[in-house]
Image (cartoon, rainbow, N blue to C red; front, top):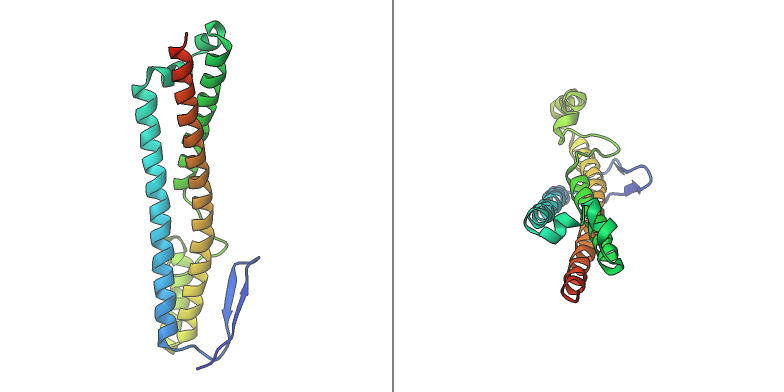
Length: 183
């Protein structure tokens, strides 16, 4: 069957016209839904790895701990102050970015596929089931995919920032070790 899809990215809404696409299309929507959900989980895992690495680094590295001690900035020479400051800022930035990744998020609207929206969508789902309305299923999957897309983009943005912060931290740490060794 032919269909026309209308997607308004500014509103995050996708509408299905009255002619319903076939079963293959619904299966494809389910697959997209699963892939986006998996990508959100992967973003959370990456953030957890970065956060764990950062905590282990800050606990085990004396230079990492010294970067957060005021005494370092008062007594040390300029290169040590510069590299310690860069490392402290990068560590803080990376930790905050990793934490922001795993914060709970919501999209523009909720569907019956999200537990937080279940109360609002339960009645509509049951009514659509009684009518055997496949349009409802398409709209629910499309709406959920729109929401998952927004969430995944936001999470991957902060994962990217956390990785960049981690790179700056590692470079600052290496430069700090070189500067410390050259004293």
